[in-house]
Length: 110
Image (cartoon, rainbow, N blue to C red; front, side):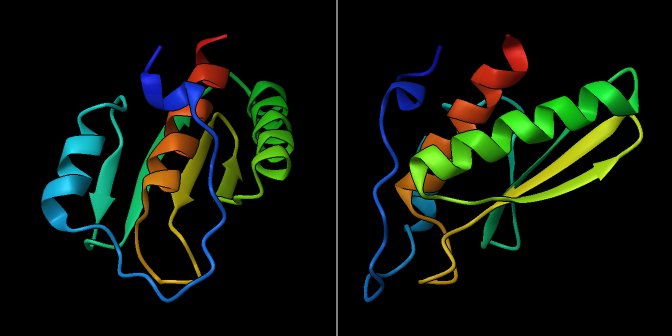
């Protein structure tokens, strides 16, 4: 498990710049198969054998998002769930985005 998954998301109050590209790349190396899109958000698609399991995953991620106070965009379709994460207050990436990504990976592994 990534050390990031053991951390808690910290609410962003705004007024801080997004992560520098170098730091974002360092954190990206600590999560599995996520990509940074448009230097703006993290993205990953999780495959599932059917809709029911994909929906169950979405519900687990929703519960996690509420616990962490950090909410990804989730795209549910038959056999897959797309996840996008970024910090809306600064319209870019923070360390909490990578923490949430690692926590979502942990759910997918269980």
